Length: 175
Image 1 (cartoon, one colour):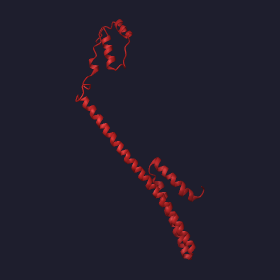
Image 2: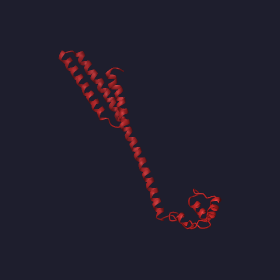
Image 3: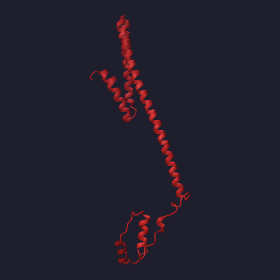
Image 4: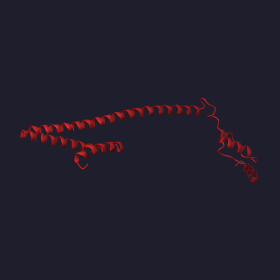
């Protein structure tokens, strides 16, 4: 783990992908990765040049084999990136199809609501239960019952409320 090549080639590749997933594209990491790639290519080219200058065929072969391994690792890494991109593309297509279906549902129900509110296909939209509540008079029971009905029983009056209203002898019941 303390070797630079392990950290650079194995650990950072995994961490970079997780970073991008968690926070979006990491341009600093991409520049560092490209710089590392160019530095590795330069080192391999220098090693090959030294081996060629010395006429050492074994060293030349080792330098070329090392470079081939690096390129194979890079190719594998890029294949993994391409695979993840294709998976993300497929997920985005699925999400887009789901969003379109939801958009159509929303439009359908919106049009249904607008149609009803204009009185187009239903009587319920034009009927306002609150407008049918009788004014509060000396007998509060009809008003209380209408309020309970209009509120779908969310407002409830007890028998005690009707008696309290009658006993209060409110001077202007219409106010």
